[in-house]
Image (tube, rainbow, N blue to C red; front, top):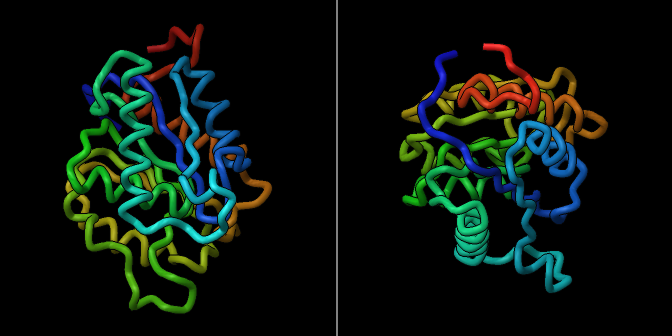
Length: 204
């Protein structure tokens, strides 16, 4: 895969609807990305911080992503255009919507992207995908009720930038006990797409 010329300065990770920044998949990705020498920020949405179970309205969720992205960019001394954004399920979806709406970013990491509610393939969450113009990684289980491999591949054809799919064989939406595989896929994509290597790795 050809490398992207953007220099990545950090990664922001957002959790799924029923979890927080300590979600095991995010913790595993954090470790894998940190091993590459990149700063990582794992965020919580306002409803989670307030102890509520019901997610905030999408406008509130999107504003939270913008705020956390700005904070990470300030921390590493760059603009958000040098950050990779993403996360699990709802968190990744909200990040993709914010980028589609115009927030500069280097790329998107979308784990278990919720293409549609289970059993409701007509309720697609894809209207914003054609507006994406950054490299995207989709990591999903082959038995994800929120979108089959065929459905996800068809939907992401609308994205006007390189798209990478990594399929976790037999995995469902939760991808339980597959966190190491997910984290390795993210690290490999960062290496292949942006030329980022682990500390001490001098291979060309």
